[in-house]
Image (cartoon, rainbow over all chains, first blue to last red; front, side, top):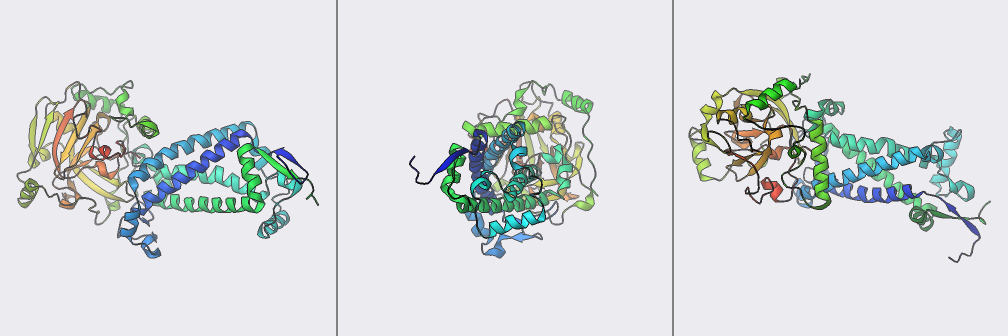
Length: 239
Length: 253
């Protein structure tokens, strides 16, 4: 590859991270789509154990410009249920393998665990400032994850992903026999459904920011790094 | 407050199962972990993973949570089909279902027919449970009815090779239930809802309660009960109306 600038190719992502990342992209896409297809055919959210059409709702899609009938016509819960459960299994196995592998090679500790001082408020303020001015990390700083990346990845992997699985499981009828305590833990079956939806929005927010940041930091270089593992680090730009 | 459920003791369960002339529900019976017909490709793998994992977790045949009567939802929804067009059904409805009867046939020792009064003479079970619709809604109601096991015993018990109970309804629905669900004490043919007769919108005169499944498998407007060794001759042979239309057969998720 001909490159005008001088620079080095560094190894950025191990193959396990790369494979699991792209499987997760596929899973997330299908889970989100199939979830929306199911939601459209019952486009309201409730709290507690009980909720049905006409019951006191905390969210109604009809208040946002789409009537029940219009939403129902767009949805397809047969397709939704089939693909939601299929990709939920793939998602679960993929992330168990990912977490197991990267705990074993200490990836989480070496690359994602915030270092001393990173969580200090001066540093947080400084890094937030960099983000808000869309200044991507350069040189050595670009070799590692910044503190907001670290925190958001850890929250997504260890908080939101497990929460999605558990709040999903708590909606299943079989769990009224297997573990009604799990359903009660969420404050009821409808609460579990509502929290599942809110948690979905948080994940969508993460994905939007994540993709945006990739473009800020250089889409070609970063996407290539997530495919091949190699990241091009220009030396000239170092200040 | 919600009442904590007790789980069925293993001894009661075995005694109950033993009373059914020879339903085998041993650990090596793989039937309870897989649908009658496994779909092709990854979808089939996903179905089996879901069903097998849940069945393993339910292997003690524990009861679903039963709520207090104070938890009962006012105006339990009448969802889906609420008025079968079937002429016979309309006729029976006009005379308060005094002419209604449920035929019990197939692999039972005494194929017979049960009127509403016959059903009510069998030992009833009342349970206050949460109905969960695959579409998304849920509500709590109290159901009174005859355990499916008690009905099959009243028909002389089932043959050794019995594997599924197929139920037909007056709204043209059919579905097959495996013995794991059939022997569960909370699987009842309900004729009472919240202390009254089951209203038409909720499946009058008798509907099935199979509590560990989504609402759509809790069939309404029951017509007949048939015990079979295989579902291949039922509908398209996939074990139920919705399975025939490429829905998953197992509906615990």
